[in-house]
Length: 474
Image (cartoon, rainbow, N blue to C red; front, top):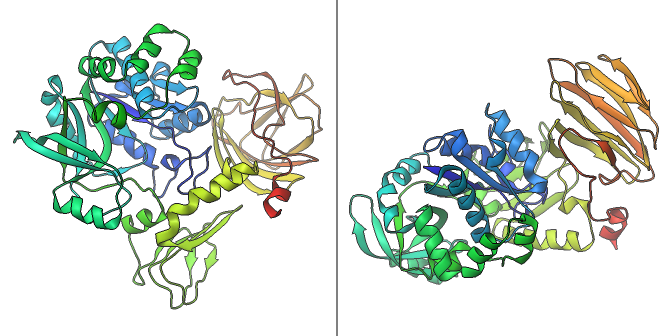
């Protein structure tokens, strides 16, 4: 079986933990991220050479970095970068097309990268491959309670008792609580967003029910042009709800799409007060059934507060009732309207050469903790509006400034003036860690001009964040 992992995402539903440049699948709510957990599950049915990841340009290095953390390296042509997000059907078609181009006719599993799923479900998914010669398969979770945040699938007659496969009677939208209970009583299943199909059957059904998708992909070789022309549609609406070759297989397994903070609260272990606490030291009094997240070792105390979400990051604070946590996306939309970088950028960022964490920032300064992988280099670059002061914390740094190269060891430092070409590299065998202090009239991430880059990156472009702090308070 070949696997497609859908790893786009907009980072709106779990803000401020997630951001547009750091969506929820890359969050580490435990030792590994949701994306890494998905990759690990796919290893049960596919080799690394058979796993394809569909994502967007801004998340490319999160994908590469988190797969590398697992000790693997995905083949370059298995990482599929969409020029822009156009919903699930174009993403899946793109992935299936590349799989068939590389391997020929194949059986393909499609997996969202931001869900929690019991590992045992992969065995069920593998066991039903026999049905793919006749059906496009979707997988329905047997519900344990009425939920308003999920779509529902109503199964019809059974087609194979060995694998709990059923024809689909209808797909139903996310209901209110009354209808959710009614759907559950009728035996409806939660729509998991997981699919399994034979590429030949899939392409035939797309030609039949969504020819605008197949025509666009097959008539062009330029991906940019394809994504300019292809409509933004989901596989559920365009194919699964129209095709007469759709079956649903029951997954009576643990599953959660972590669609909001209330879902996170319901999923994870509570303390004796019913609180879910991450990272911080909890000194709450008379407070129960809360989700509390703050920086590591930070003391947090809630007094007589119940059923709330409290999420404290270095640049944002969210407080809301658990049942209102789906409204978080409205906050993100408001930040985007103001071109506020806090809707887009997270304090922790992957790069092809390593990663950095923003420790502190204002309009005129920023402090980063930067880690550079052995034998990797940042681009040759300059900044128009900021200077940089580097202090080596660990390892050895190679610094090139205006054509001159010198080396810095632990405890040594250097200063780079604004407007000067420079490059930082790690020539050693251990990770290089530095503290970077940026000072200037503007310290946005888009103040960078690249002259030479090992990873083929162009100059950074973001919305104009220069006045965002003032806009937030207006």
